Amino acid sequence: MRYLSTRGVAPELNFDDVLITGLARDGGLYLPTDWPKFSPEDLRSFASLSYPELAIEVMRPFLGDTMSREVFGNLVDATYRKFSHPSVAPIKQLESNIWLMELFHGPTLAFKDYAMQILGRLFDQALLARGKRTTIVGATSGDTGSAAIEACKDREAIDVFIFFPKDRVSPIQQKQMTTVDADNIHAIALEGTFDDCQDMVKALFNDLEFRDKFALSAVNSINWARLMPQIVYYFWAGLSLGVDDHRLVFSVPSGNFGNVFSAYAAKKMGLPIEKLIVATNSNDILSRFFNTGTMEIKGVQPSISPSMDIQVSSNFERLLFDLIGRDGASTNRVLKEFRNEGKFTVSEETLMDARRTFDAVCVDDMDTLGRISKTFKEKGEILDPHSAIGVEGAYRFASSDAMKNDISIVSLACAHPAKFPDAVQKATGEHPNLPHHLDDLWERKERLTVLPNKFEEVSNYIADNSRVELK
Ligand SMILES: *Cc1c(COP(=O)(O)O)cnc(C)c1O
Image (cartoon, rainbow, N blue to C red; front, side, top):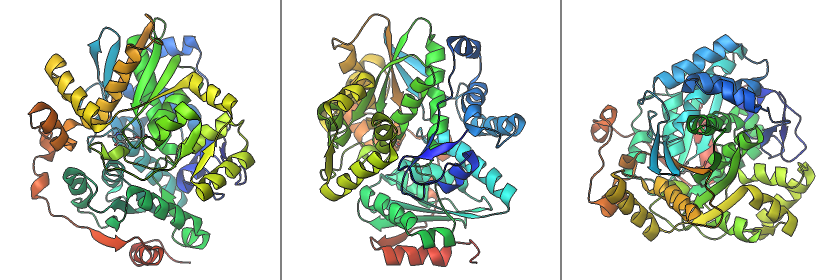
């Protein structure tokens, strides 16, 4: 299996190199040159597999010959054994045709653990084999950072620098990032927005000299190896419901477009997906795109679903590349225009093509609270605000003309309600409790560094604290 860059200039790489490289040197994102394909017979043969067994089957083709089946199998087993629910990603029925897939049973209570826990182990494996170290830099609006820190703490070959927007993550998210007592972990509160954090990470990568000197690597969803493990749970949902009897619709609470791109990959690989609902909060750059064909930056409005408060969705580049015929030069041109003008528009044809697979909804804070409240009253389920946006998208689709009898909608529950207690309490009157393994979270001591949104100061901080040997 080979990987190419969406900007068409950087050389093709194999899985190991894509893993360690993260962002391509031409500024693009990596994608497999071809999608592995599963036939309906293959899918039927997967029907009785456990989550880890299915994960091995779905991910193996992406690894090529970079790791033996046995080594990879052990790694996957070790990963999901640590999850707190026996089925890893339990699926609950809300209506005759609407289901909820819970993806918050990992150590940091958001779906990002499902990929990050694998990623930490893959990194270690690849670096140990090469006798190398790496400096991981990442931007987070909250959940990525805690998942990355938890997955990389105390890993000998890795130093981690995570940037989060100062005072803009929830107290629990901040605690989860700043109370991990490991020397290789650096939680940095940047004086800016999430997009500033993301731009900072891009700027560090685009300084090729700095990048090489400190062997920079990324665990944001710009890294293909972050998206790969997420493909698994879409197959898991489809197989659990029975792919022969159902056409699938997934409603995916979206920010950086990573999770829903993994669903798109699952469709390319043979899962019978009818539609993907891109569900956003009032930071609706994605839903505006899918409804008008114009991607246009507006400011970020803080919302009650902060993990989706973003202005630019970095993984959209992967879809754009596919939509415009996998032409790296064109992708580069469109994204340059986007950077310079703050917007771009695709052709009518391209928009129609996108809309064959994607639908989009924007759910504001009021409707989010309304859905949390209604689901609690009617179903006894407590949703976190991000999950509620997906569920609201599912109900809107179910009552639209596009709904058919043989369609099953699966909405993704992306975070545990206790991660966002204020919104949940406001909507339900209930205070959601953290799982017991986090009982002492509030007593743990915080360790963080506050830095201004200035490249010089940030790069100096990394230079002073990275353990990568300078050549
Ligand atoms: C990261 C995150 C999202 C957004 O996912 P993307 O892959 O960035 O689209 C939504 N909800 C929660 C709880 C998250 O942590």
